[in-house]
Image (tube, rainbow, N blue to C red):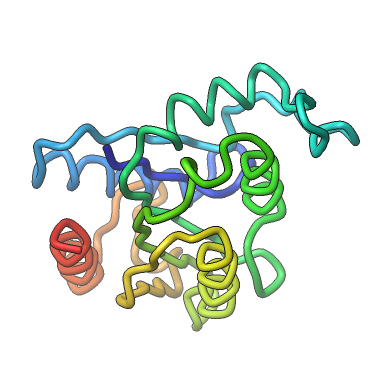
Length: 180
């Protein structure tokens, strides 16, 4: 199974639009099950001081971990740039999921990273930070990390990616990821 993570809890995010594009393309290119987890749609009842204690994980977070992370062999993280890094919601989600079933959740799995930004760098620093986090938890990261810059110029405002060169590099990354 491949899980795509739209890595922000911001409503109606550009990250979700890119995640939906990846979901569609992956479904067209593989017979593997593909699931999309949008952090904007998850409950946040698990954010409390006891979330790091053994047995302190909320039922809602356990259910998400059981459905989207534990059965996944691969992850695609769509990571918008937040203050030169990753969204805090993504880091908190990974931290929360590392308390229960740490190794089965992350160790030995593979991930592709896609950085998106309105600026020029396509969240390169955020992808580097996310690579460090994933390596720490035992996940192998596809070397072809894809920075997508100036996203307001390459989309139509309704979630459609219009820029042909961007569509080509996305498809190339997906092909490489499926063979990874």
